[in-house]
Length: 243
Ligand code: MLT
Image (tube, rainbow, N blue to C red):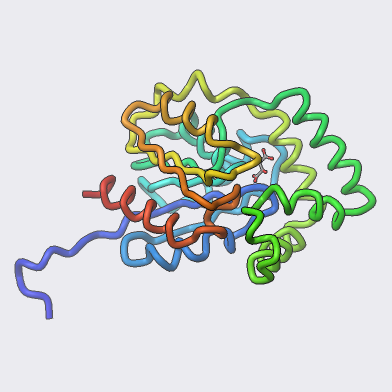
């Protein structure tokens, strides 16, 4: 039984933003591991083809009041846009396996090729992406590959097209980094091939007081590849932000 002086910690609200072709399963382990600290909501980022409208949609799905915000990859692009649209709502920010940089012409060309391929063979798109998403040691791990495949099948080709158009059109978030005032965690897998370590060093350098965590033996989808380490880093971030 609680005595009169027992502190009752109020849980923070936590809004989690998935990446390309990901759904709530991307964050499942973190939702479970952090349940004592936070009420988590995973936003659906499938409904529109601009980062600005995905951010508005995520804000509409967010709990009332202030929340901690974490985005992985495309979810990070959306998180950076939320920091422009509603910074007062965000009590702490975590940017995982993402970048503040805009699209390059080469990246746009690659996306357009994948979109053409998706018209006829969405499975081939998934097969092309998979080796870039996880650490090579996990490519034979059926449990992880099955989750990635099930998420992509569930999201489907039409939402994939919208997400690609949104990412092609995204703006350069680097000029806005210095405006971010809340406690910020920047995290990536050492072997992230899509958003490598150097772009996280740039993010961390641009956001005053942020901390940079690099997870060893870990690829792009860090929450799936090294779930425990990501949960631990997010626990430290949430505890510090809500202390
Ligand atoms: C993601 O995981 O959200 C995407 O790979 C990001 C991107 O393609 O830029």
